[in-house]
Amino acid sequence: MALKGRQVRQLRSLAHHLDPVIIIGKADVSEGTVDQADKALEAHELIKCSVLDSSSLDVREAAEALAERCHAEVVQVIGRKFALYRETSREGVEKIELVQ
Image (tube, rainbow, N blue to C red; front, side):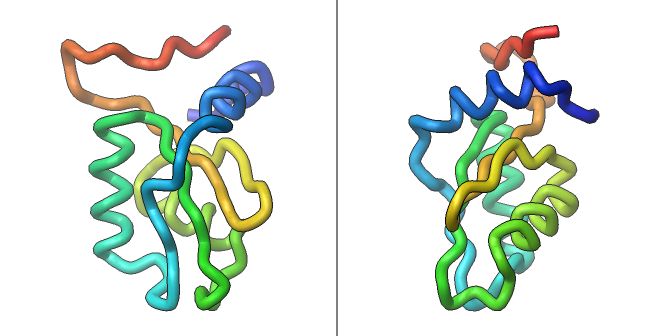
């Protein structure tokens, strides 16, 4: 699902106030990191992640690697942080309503 410009802006504004829930360090994007990010995306749809200086990946590489493995979209990359979005498959929960 490719996000449109308006949708990216909407998600960026929502992600601004979030604290990082995933921290990528020396182990880079491991199976544990992917599993943790997958669960967080399923629960929240929009998450913020942080990349430590000890990681061998740069922030953009880490964001794209994690997004690909979690089937998510990279919303924004700023400094050492990035935001990911994926619509949840859970029923009966309040979902983020994206603008058209």
